[in-house]
Length: 212
Length: 212
Image 1 (cartoon, rainbow over the protein chains, first blue to last red):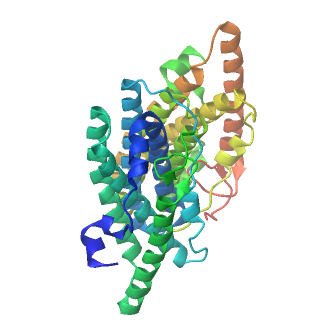
Image 2 (image 1 turned 135 degrees about the vertical axis):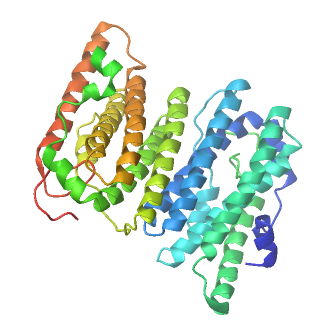
Image 3 (image 1 turned 60 degrees about the vertical axis):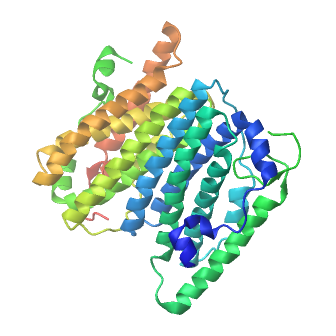
């Protein structure tokens, strides 16, 4: 990991959110909130999945239990905002983003644990970057809420990166780690820059007006 | 649901924890703590599973998001206590209890949702009852911790019962509900009273000294 990434977790992202996505999201902010609530729920579920997969790693379990609690609180906050702004509930299936990233992760240990943590860092960093990109474009109450969330997601990205670096020993390990992070960041960037038929919090460049 | 159960969720349990289990648990309190941490994690996971299964039910989702946060905090508290008391981490597979109860639940909706909520109420009520049964038998720090947890679990049992009763309309509905609760409580009682080769937080009467 570069020093830049250590100081600022957003440094791990290769590309900025395309303007076309941000403008679409600003227009479809009600749909965005629905998918955002789903994302917070999934983020809590991902943290819990780590706790089931690596119960012997107490430090990791404690960090991710707290992180899961924070994601759940965000979920509750999004739901309250939706109620306040009269945003109707609707089912939205998952987009391609997390699944496509996950499909590229190593399947054998210890590489899988490192990859899962790096994917967690990338997703949290992207969330932070999008909250910041949206803060200026959204209606007042949503903008203020998102500015606050951006800070949490930045911290979460840092936590995942720190956990991923825990077991590194020596220079060759660090080099392999940086190489792997760059590989996964490239996959992530491709998902953000390529046309995407579905609109979601983590989707690519909007293809059409068809949002659901 | 009887008025007794409304006033005191523990009223839904058919039998008290056998003395043999409590004595075994007091002797094997280190193992108990390991499985207890797993139970808190699973309780959070169960609450989250409801949120994924019934996203349109906002009241249920909000209640269970908060409940999941509380279970995660308990998980963190058990882990801290284990560290303080020098209890080693070890992998323990799940016991028969939750799986056997779950196997008896309806598979089609809306009966499944009701059954899942009733199973949640029974498990939380049993947890409360066991924390109370253990509070007098365990070493000081664990006893004090368990006395506090008993109150949370009692409240959780009440919340699950309340959610299960949300959609009831009319007397015949209420009668069918009471009948179903009695059926599942009988299954639960059988799991508590019958010999069990494994020792767990929710296991039956200990068969042997073989604990793991």
